[in-house]
Length: 264
Image (cartoon, rainbow, N blue to C red; front, side, top):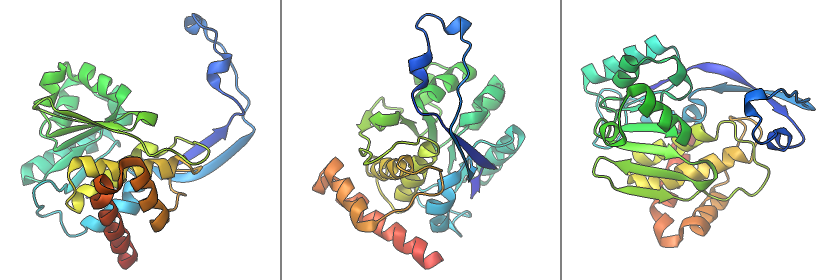
C-alpha cells in the first residue's frame, strides 16, 4: 500500500543559475525576480515513481510481509491521513516506511514523533533529516533508536544508510549522462530502493538501484516521463559499482522489469 498525494509539477526553465544573482551576505535583504523562458506541466505526486516502479510488485502483500519487506509507504499528504495510516500500520503489525518530507513544516513534535517511531525505514534528504531531528526534539542517537534504517539522499553524492548500531554506508550516485532536472529524483530513489528491498536485496544493493532510478529521473524533464533501457541500466550499474558489487542489483532490476511488464 502506498499513501501519498496526487498533484502536478509545474516546471519553469531559467537559463542560468539563481546563485549567480545572489549577492553574498545579502540574503536577509534578498529581492530578485527571475523570468522563466519555458513552463511545462507533468503529472506528479508525493509518491510519483513509486507507483510506476514498485507498487506493482507488492500487490497482495499488505496482509503480511517477509522480514525486510515493506507493506506500507507513508508519503507526504494530509497530516491527519499520514497519522491515521501510521497508526493503522502499527495496529496491524505491518512494516512501514516513513517519508514525511514536504509536510515537515506542518508537523508538531508529537505528530512527527508518532510518524517516525517504529518505522522500518525513514526516508529524507539531508536537509529534511535535520528538520526531523529539530521537530522531534531528538538527538541523532535518539532518532536512530526509533527506526530500523535511516536512508538519507545526498543529491549528487548518492545516499547514506545508517542503523541504530552506528554503522553507516555511503553509496555513490550513478553519474548522469545528460542535462539534470532534479524534480522527482528523490521519489525515483525511493522507487528503486523499495523495489530492491521487495525483491530481497540487502539495503546497500537496494540503494544502488535507488541511485540508478534517481539518475534516470534527473536526466528527464518531469518526474514521470523517464524511461529505462535494461541493457544500458545494467552497464551503468557495473560502471558505477563494479561487476561483482552490482551483480545482485542487476539481477533484481531484470526481475523487477519482468514483473512490471507482466503486470501490464
